[in-house]
Length: 160
Image (cartoon, rainbow, N blue to C red; front, top):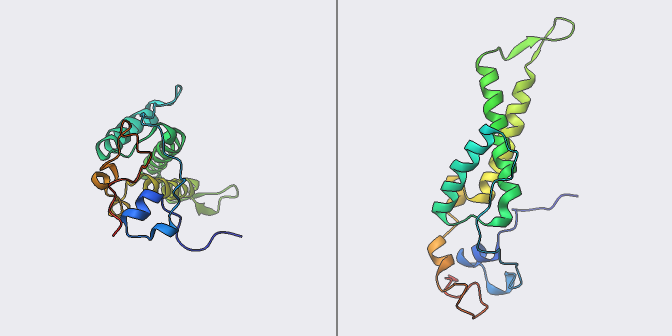
């Protein structure tokens, strides 16, 4: 049975968007303040996408070390989408099947599956216009510093 309703939001985001404190998770884990590093052995195209995306996430101040594997999956999906799109640009949508009948080019499914993954991961990372409207980086970082010692990662957050 799949969960109903929208995907859960991180507590900091829920508080910033006006959710009531009793609905928030005060015990949500806080990621370490360190940047994700690209795993060794990634292909050139995936690394190119990784570097671009890391620059964007760094500028938005939303990247953490624990995001590495999800970010890698996103980058691999973008690479797959690009490869399938290139293949489709140089071939037909319908190709000959085993028995000579016209069938859909399998690259269409690869492209569609990759696009779905891209959308899902992009929303998680705040890489879509709609997902960015729900993130307020300046407010989320206000009053929170590793040396503050108050133990409250949501200090200074607006609670609407």
